Length: 225
Length: 79
Image (tube, rainbow over all chains, first blue to last red; front, side, top):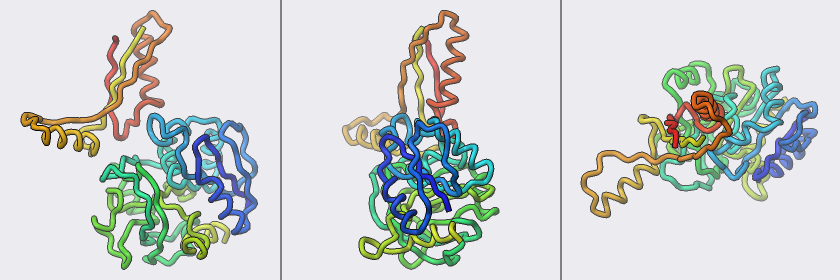
């Protein structure tokens, strides 16, 4: 399977995701944001980091870059798109995903391992995870507080477009297991066609027991299978 | 022609930075605070003499890049 990782000035998780993709047998290309053409891709990843130093709003400048026009085109024809952390913020700014990512409720940059419950696995990114299973991934962000309007939230819930919610170690979804103030503890969302996933936690950091755990692997094997 | 754009979070969106500034001012003894919102201020100078055209160009910039209309609102003032 062919993957492309988009690189912006200020991206800093691009190599981590490239390492994860290569380890899991994707044929990966790195694509600089000024390019006007995408290599043949089954999966496009917009990585984490601080594209353009988070100027104006996180992701706002990157969303207007040359290559994003191509990403939008590819996504409309069904290509899988995964935005992680700053990548999620960029997807929101392009309008490919709806809602907004506000500053964390406690105003702190949060970098820690958290727990997630798999709420919906009926999509190409999560089918290898068990529904209601609990995994541990890492978060590292300042603006991850997801917000959306009531009617869109209902749409997300009714159409199984929320794959992950923040939870406690034993699976409780409540305010104390919500690290950043996200509406309904939402950690990631899909578009209505389920080919675009945006998520704040970093699956690419959890692919090796030697340095963390392997809870991120199923996301990539789901895409491959 | 020069314009100022003032961007703030919409009323029903939580503004944690504004809240902290408010609490700090109250802690400093300001006791008549009603409400405080924090925002952004952008100055834009245009090569355009027609005020109507210039205004609508700035408005277009707001809608396309400067403002996230889901969570923010803006005011444009000629300065």
